[in-house]
Amino acid sequence: MHPDSARELKARILERLPAAPAVAEAAGPDAPWPWVAVGLTPTAGRRVGVAIRLQRESDRALLPDLGAAAAAVVDVQVIGPVRALSRPGPAELRQRVRPLRPGLSVAHPAVTAGTLGGFVRTAAGLSILSNNHVLAASGAAAPGDPVLQPGPADGGRPADGVATLTAFERFGAGPPNRVDAAVAALAPDITANPGDLPGGPLTGAVPAGLDVDPDEAVEKVGRTTGHTRGRITAVEVDAVAVQYDGVVHRFDDQIEIHGLVGSFSAGGDSGSVVWRSRDRAPTGLLFAGSATGGSSGGGVTFANPLDTVLAVLGATWVPC
Image (cartoon, rainbow, N blue to C red; front, side):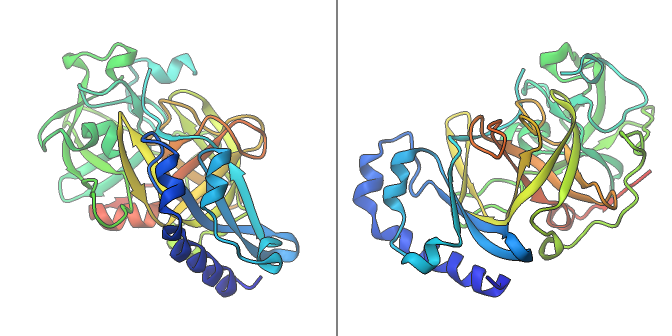
């Protein structure tokens, strides 16, 4: 399909989902309704289809009948629950490391551990970029709170403070969220090496969200699984329902990634910056994933488009 036709089909699917409330109610309280995420995915011949992701097999009953022609360009996969990926990899990334670099364990004192994704410049100066649920305890924190490296799950204590929380995007219960993101300004005595990544600094320009293509090879370095490689399998994914310690928040316009071999990410990798392999352009901010589904059976990962993250936080990417 042409991308515009795929977007029209995606919109039709999302519009028709509310037609099945009885089925959703029967699914039980553990399944926020509708638990159906819909995005765009590559097909043969550089065309585009529609990706549909379900929490469980029974959720197929939520899908509208689109006809045989539409069904031929729709990829439906059951991926299980999607959860925020910060909790108690490579041992070095979980230790106290100075100077700071991307991939290290970091967290608010009330959080277990997530990942230092990279460095940005804000009005407060050079700052750490990660998720709200990593640096700001899912919105329970306040500007001025400390950020520890390593995170508490990896032995971080008050003396390991490296930055001060300055801004985060709060989760909303109304319109779907766009990002799970926060920044914390580095303490004056803390040094950083932003370009210390596998393969060197990220030298490509941050792509606009609409310029992120499905079927791109990508990489990341995270506190739990270290350096992994994957492939973008869907973009513009709407209605992604993510569980945060019993609370569910929905996200639109997200990026879906599958690992090339096994999992692309796991708990504790939240906050990792995802980059394109072909030009080392920082592309997404990893924030959630599932334990099942995906091309290699290791689950799927979701990331916020990085240009959206930077715009929301008023930040500029620092490559090296």
